[in-house]
Image (cartoon, rainbow over the protein chains, first blue to last red):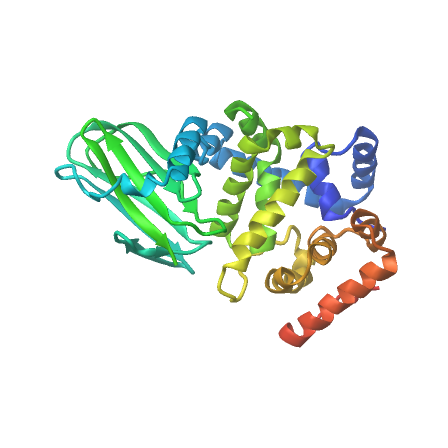
Length: 191
Length: 161
């Protein structure tokens, strides 16, 4: 008996097959214990994944493009002023930005001006002395922006959700954090 | 696309796309990164997704690109936790490891054919239709890939007919 290829089983389980093809797979699985076992395993994996990371949680973690910020930063980049906005890396009392880089399984902390490459994964923490509203975002020299946090944050060191992967082509990146007290930043250059 | 639409797409297809990324990348953490990248792109390319006949195949194509981007910058090393779906697939692990290390060196159509064959288990006839080559050409290209794989990784048990 020829078994159903994995791709077709995946489409069947995801309800992505046209009805006649889905019916063929269903009929085959009724006669084929091996394929039925694989279907069951895929469905169990689906349920497990969605229980661990429900859709709303998953979507909250995504680096959703903020059109207004993208436009504003693109315009600023075009004017050549973006990277002159952050001459003082730390300006708030008791506050700071911490950026960790993961590369080839190794994690290290980045300082101002440290190098990054495409494929690197970045995690950002914000340290604040008092609870405050903060917006933390990351902008690259191409004008793309990613918001990491936008709202009330408690005091202390806050590891922000979501790793940011540096995608090719690698560009210089600056991480900004803004509160009512002003803006601090950490610039990272492309190696 | 709106956040609700992306959430619905993830609910229906996310686990399958994650499995795809794990099969290609072999590492859970990297696969999670790729999954996030795939669904982030939905915000930007929602119209193309909506227009696709097969939403899952559209997401798989995006996932393949994301995975190869990540793979291209990963230090070569032994693949781990490839997660075969069933035990009789254990023999495929070797092929998947080879795919991970070699496919980045081939052009898009060879890569697509190899993924369809070694990862998706699609027949040569169906691959030929999908990539627009004859069955013989698909077979020849996969043989070339296999020969290079043999040179690097040793024996393959499954012959390309």
